[in-house]
Length: 198
Image (cartoon, rainbow, N blue to C red; front, side, top):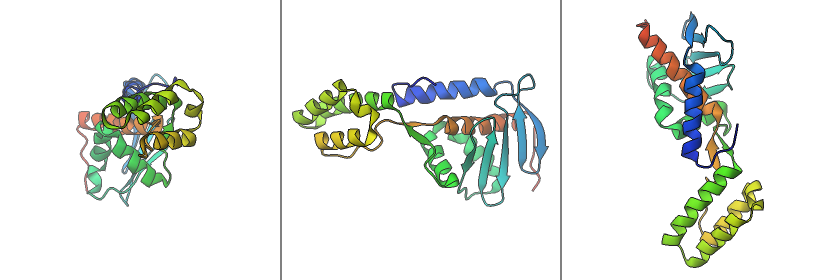
């Protein structure tokens, strides 16, 4: 996948890709708190969603596995809860990191870092001393720091006196596809007037 500049732009493109990938999916298998969906014409991007008794939801298949952890409401609301995360991917990243025991919802992207640094330089022009703005502009001219996140964060800290640890971090495809897979499942269930008997 091509690296994109802005995080919002990247997330929007991933959302569009997920919507296209799941647009013709149907429920092909139903079990107790478990559903498998796929496009009847193709085998790519099939997925399965399973609800576990402890408030955990698993999405896996021909997409990266994602485990959403720590839902404290009634189990039958779990699907809607995850499907609703399409408006808050930061929350989805957090819940996947909890569920999988590792920060798998974000990754560093040098192009996103360049975009973020430009935005920070604009803020610095208004809020920080001119020295900080100059240092950030100097960093923008030098391509090397973008390949080493640690050095870049150190340089930004020295220029601004503030830690900016989200620079260059972007939402992974794993997060977007998992949320949109559950969103598609919820749409299919509502269309089929599925009712869960508890």
